[in-house]
Length: 269
Image (cartoon, rainbow, N blue to C red; front, side, top):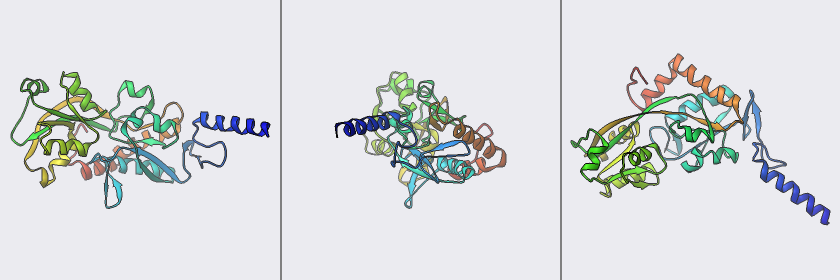
């Protein structure tokens, strides 16, 4: 009996330590498709953080958006369907969700940054992003320095590059857990302006409920979004997603998706 206990304990320890995409016994159905490792048979499992329109948001019981449509193209190339899991952004950017075998790919409107690339493997850039300040319509600023000089209350989304950018300019912004809370912070008067990715702000301004707000400043921070896979563990999936991005740009699918979710596509998109 003692030997059995020791063997069982050893086996359990190996399973816990492995953090592999397939379980030691009977716990998972991880497979390899076209060389890409998938955690679930017939699925390309995507971790994202909801809501973050127009990149991903729940509509009519489904998660839809720009990122969703691009990853759907990759899933189609693999002959599987996409399954989306809502995950805290902190576990996405640190690679925790990918390392735990929770998902195959992270798609969360995520800026490519060297400190994040220590923990995850980014695809090539798939979206050129800028930040924007949103405030009362008609109020404009030339920079965050001007906002700081006027001692205005600034809101930001936790763990985002917008928040990092505000902090880099010496602004102690009020942090909100997600984009909905951030927008509500502006609406409720908790803050005077908010900093968020420009396409997200543009999406909000299409809603008549936000008619009294406008873009107070456009901040070109040179950011680019990337999808991500588990660090050093899934090169074939990384290559397939990169190929998907290239093909979508070449065959017009990217332009179609861009104009569906963002608007007219600029030449440098």
